[in-house]
Amino acid sequence: MKSFFLLFVFLIFNCFCVLGQKSNRVITTAVPFLTITSDARASGMGDLGVATSPDNYSQNWNPAKYVFASTEKGLGLSYTPYLSNLVDDVFLGNIFYYNKIDDRSSWAASLRYFTLGDIQFNELIGGTIVDLGMQRPTELTLDFSYALKLSATFSTAVAGRFIYSDLKIETDGDTSARGTLGVDIAAFYQSLPFEMLNVSTVFRSGMNVSNIGPRLSYDMGLQKSFLPTNLRLGTGLEFLLDSQNSIGVYNELSKLLVPTPVAVYDSEQNISGYRQPDIDFISGIFRSFSDAPNGLREEFSEVTVAVGIEYRFEDTFSLRTGYFTESMDKGSRRFLTMGTGFKLDFIDIDLSYLFSTSSVRNPLENTIRFSLALKLDQSPTPSTSN
Image 1 (tube, rainbow, N blue to C red):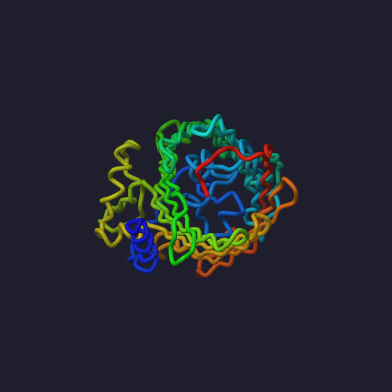
Image 2 (image 1 turned 60 degrees about the horizontal axis):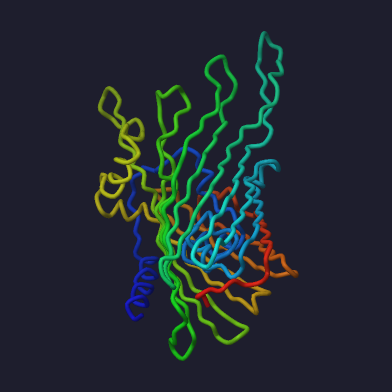
């Protein structure tokens, strides 16, 4: 157990050691809405969730956690307004459902829906504005996962994902929506309670490689974009202070397994921009660990770090906070989050709020995220979790 504690301390230390380097090679992908944190519990802790305790929203973070859930089945609903300072009809909505088959296995399904709202199109023809109608670009995913507990403390999971993207604006050319498939591979470890500083403690760690799949093309295959294949590694310690109070401390590292954009040169051999290399997604995953032009320092700058804390009282009330940081040259997402949760009978209600600490405006700034978790079977199943 000492080795697990040292690993936790090491990952916490990484929060202060991930240094950026100026490159302006920001990694972009297709369907970026898959990287938006959808549930208010995770977003209240700095956008992390791969190694937190199981909940109804584990499908998006680590489906291997479901076999450690305290109830046999549950339903989750979440709503996230996007760009709420500018418009009121752009949002991300999610539905989650999980069912434990027995004490060793479970399955889960989820639907994620993102819309850019109603967009009015006009064209100026001969000095007259012609109404071209209203369009509503949307994207969605349908997921299914299966988790298996390999021991009393360790589980794995695999998830399949159908991705549908309909963002094209109707023109005389090809306007068909695009679809593709993705796969997640996840693992989760949850220790039995042990004593640390005379306090009963549970150690958790998790890993998830999400959105592994072929590139998505919007223009008849002429240009293909990588999916946001993402590696998450996290650890956490939950201190069970007494029968009513607990405090969880969590840390998570994340890296897009997508190649660093390569420079595009003009006729005078000056850099005119950057583009994704034209390679398959499997090669892109392996290349993403060593292709940064400025070496290891830039590779580290592509790692995001999140830390979070959660206080619970009798599983009926929670307070949360967290911090997320990203290199200034790789997106500059930096924000502090706060959240709370409370239980009303069989319904858990979670809320979160984001405070940006970056010079770059965050589209979720001044936004309240909202989630509901319904425990459909309140009789706990046998489990080795805390």
